[in-house]
Length: 179
Image (cartoon, rainbow, N blue to C red; front, side, top):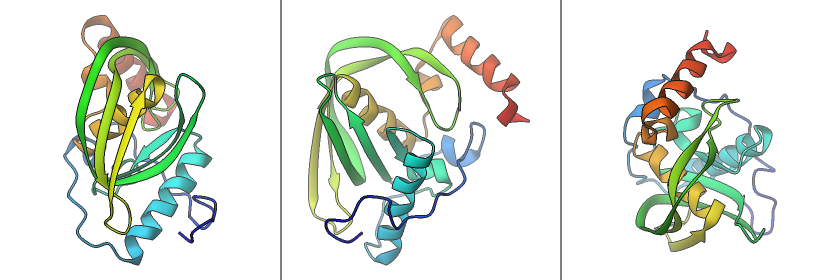
């Protein structure tokens, strides 16, 4: 990605990986190659996220089992956060626990009240291997936790219990994209 360019403007929209695909349910590998293929992956992630449209997208959601995600997400004060993280680690998730509607591009059209912490701190590196620290609150904290979960092989439905979990999984089985 050229400095100053719009994220995703040179990317290719890739097919979305949907619930049930094994790549969504296994931890992703650390990125070790910080060359042109990583920059292309990040551009493709942005292009795919914007086309979906979504506020975050992890590499395994387009079938690439590497620890990378992108985001373009507002927080609860409507401040826009745009960026990417390579080899991210959720180092803090704390504060008040909030149950809020959560969806996922890999489960299109479905959402459920999911509990997340109201504050998150994620550390990783950028596409050049330089350290990055991203802190979020509110909806942006939810996004950071959601994308980190993806890279650990979890989807938001894995955080649900009882009738909420059952309702989402039943709806997924009946969804037109799950045929």
